[in-house]
Length: 426
Image (cartoon, rainbow, N blue to C red):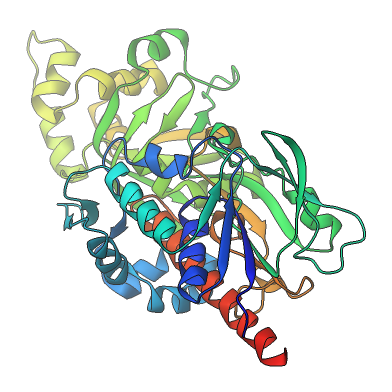
């Protein structure tokens, strides 16, 4: 069997992992990326400590992928959290489990892992071509892996390969390379692509006064950027299922973002798409029961101000106190029972997600039923897809990155097996 030429388009974690499998099978692999350097989104993720994966039990881990959980389960069985940590260790990057169960490199950085990985890839003959933006296919290509058009530093070129792996990312953070430009090119070839939508995103609030989206000027200017810590958030999705999480989020100039919001962004987004603005409920004191809070607030406050009373009896200060005043009618503050109820279940109307460009990741993409079990597009023989360009989503916490690694590995192995079958026919 002669060695084949492989084109991998997209040099993020999924594309590089696919390249690794194909190079290990003895093929010449050329990786193309539109940006001046590779894996930019991975490096940005590493700024605050690279969250590689999560240590929770496998069944819980798989459930984080929602409707795609059954499809993703097979890929994670082959390359899940433990395998990913072992792979990183082979690159000389030790990992640890944080208090939240998340897994990080010991040095909390992405760059050392990426450097070691690129060194190993190049040692196996992988060639990386940056500043090469894919422009789709040329006319009258003999096979779908041929006639690949690129705009590079020296103008437009055409590349032909025996197989191509597409790892083009979704539609968020276009400045890092994921701009969704590939969608119409695949659709023109008959590939079903679900619309790209924001995932792990912030949302804009709609005030009860109906004055449009966003907070009032005073609250926005005073508290934008402040964290709402130790709260619980609940929402009922479009199917009537209630979701609740503990954590913290961040007040923005127009709404909320951050880990707790991202964890619930899918049911919130889907509910908005189905029925319009959705009401979520915030528990500002999740460690206290409603009855305990009512008793505490009902005690005489004497000459103390209401703000002082809320602080001493309920621990409500700063941004939490500001949020209550922003949302509640003044009359509620004269009724301690009603105020206690509002503290335990403060209604907020979320009107719309922030734009896709701002989202951490995207939902939608190439439909999973367009792929065969080897990750090849059923209607384009020799073209494989992986990573965030596929129609699956997951919350932050290591799930996104693990999914990209796992599907990239699967696409690389699938492409290698397909080339092996081609070789057997030669």
